[in-house]
Length: 343
Image (cartoon, rainbow, N blue to C red; front, side):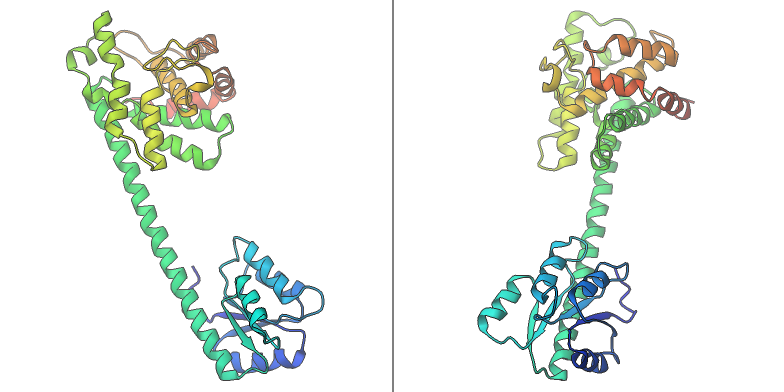
């Protein structure tokens, strides 16, 4: 947001030099005034790194008309909120309505009164400043809510690990592995951020698994295995169903990260592309970290052994395209595992 202690800028656009000079004369004591004799120059100034805070715009000009200049400014997402006031000799109600329909905030008729121009400019700049401040406050509050929500998600993921044999760095590694695979597979920044933040929730359902099953050092019997598989549906129930994008993806990950590409996974026996993308990615990240980590029943595998296993499961347990993406970032995976190793 612009520092409101600085002098605000008004751009005056008119093909008549006399009008430009007159408007400059009585606006300059209070505002920084820029002028443009045609629409092309006006647009260059609006699209510059130092855009005006308000535009006073004539309608009838050679080249681009004021209507077209207004239309282009309002079509630009980065400049569309700049208030535009038409200053014109055209005085019909239809003309005024048309100008306002293009996005102008006001309409001043020529010949104009300096006092009216100053009053209208002052009013609309005050409204513009207030709108900017409200937007800043909303963005700040939204950011605070998002950060709080992300912290809660991470804490819930950590809570599940307090009950398991996993270490604290497990969720950090799985989250980072998932983000690396997502990045290598072409996900955009927004999706990568969500994936990274929801991955810690993948095993939250283990909170609901009895200790004698969850912590059993040996192989689970068939009945115990059925109980263990329920952590996916328990996790989905803990998170619940929400319209919120972050929580809805967290639920999907908790529910589907044990589905397999060939349809032999659980709990829904989904196969191929029917498995949500985030579930497919977290499945890879989770298994990879399990292979690379020491467990009571196995030593840690080397990165070469783990990657060989992952390639062997391509098209069976894992999405082949995602395994290709994983193989392309083997060095990054090794570095991440080393930097987040259990101490």
